Length: 157
Picture 1 (cartoon, one colour):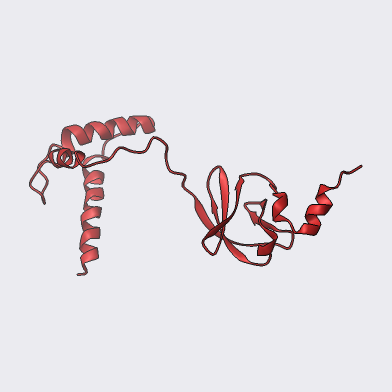
Picture 2: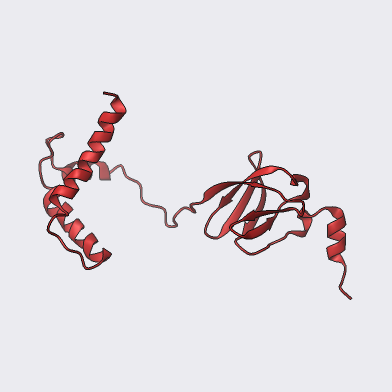
């Protein structure tokens, strides 16, 4: 048996323990109730038993580890998704039905886009090329070719 399958089995054993010893015959009104029951079960039952492998109580081992744990950051990290995008002739890329401008020198190139809940970051060869707030069509005039910049600088009148 491969070492990774043994480790996988150890992790899955914890899931099996939860399914067999916590979930049967329980009912939950909502997620808060499930969390409260799970917390009570961990603190009073699962965490107090003598573990078959370590021969120690899980909560005792947790207290040893707690001294070495760091606090969570005050602000959660901005998680994002990565996507390959191609720059259109109009100096824009499309992501989730929205268009975002990038420098005109990147027209026709394939770039990487990182989208978070609030912003879009566009990279070319590991260099940040553009940043936008999530919106419908945010265009930065400096991203457009000189002729287009001149066109958009004219007053309608």
